[in-house]
Length: 143
Image 1: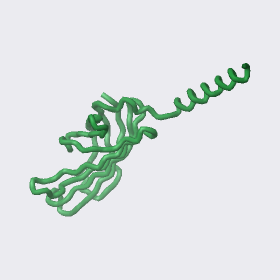
Image 2 (image 1 turned 120 degrees about the vertical axis):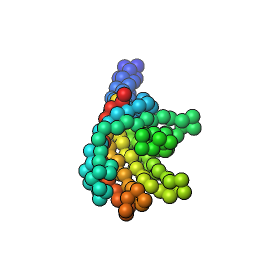
Image 3 (image 1 turned 90 degrees about the vertical axis):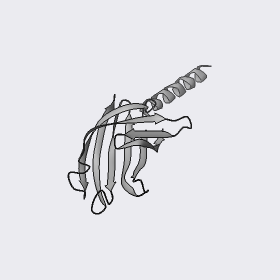
Image 4 (image 1 turned 45 degrees about the vertical axis):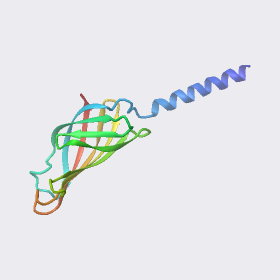
């Protein structure tokens, strides 16, 4: 009987300590505010120059995640890895004729009420003379 109690206590401790080490992304739906700092790329410094911004994450009824921001108001779908709290999405902005004008790829990791990660933006003619990219480091918090 004593061995059973010791084993049960060890099992409870092992389960509770391992779950404390797991990242928390159970509540990432909602509005987020952050800072984007440009750290590379070949776009003109006036384009994709970073700064303050907001975005919204929403989990849809079918389980897909939707990210919306002022630059991609219609939003686009991304994936959330629940075990690492890493969210990735690739968004495209199209002209009336269907030509790609710009893209943004998000790679964010969430930890409770904060996030950090990277964004890669690209612009295409006629927005720019020739295709260019800009890389940014991002971080922020839930509003």
